[in-house]
Image (cartoon, rainbow, N blue to C red):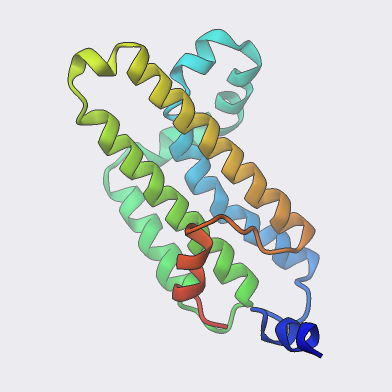
Length: 170
């Protein structure tokens, strides 16, 4: 009986499993932290030719996204107000949108930390290591989230998902 009660209390339990269209739509917000994370891959792109495929595929979106300082601001508010706060959309979609926003905020914080390092550290192995780890972590996190979203399950990332559950009520 306890497992049944816990399953009934799970987010989205009343809605049932998300359909294929909602799962595909839920993947789209994850492009935001992906293109933000691609900025950190400069050392990876130099060492591994196959990684340039990411730039080939997402380069135009990356260039458009960073073409104006207003675009990231507008995308953030559009995603937050039109998707996350829209209770008419399934919880699954709103969860994915909010999680992508929080992942993007984490990447912005990583970028700020790296940019405030002394220049000697930024251009040294320390800065390269920090950028590489940020790149690998961001691409891995986004791939993990996209996989779980396609399968129709909630991608649980410690701390981030907890914050998402606080923001996105069923």
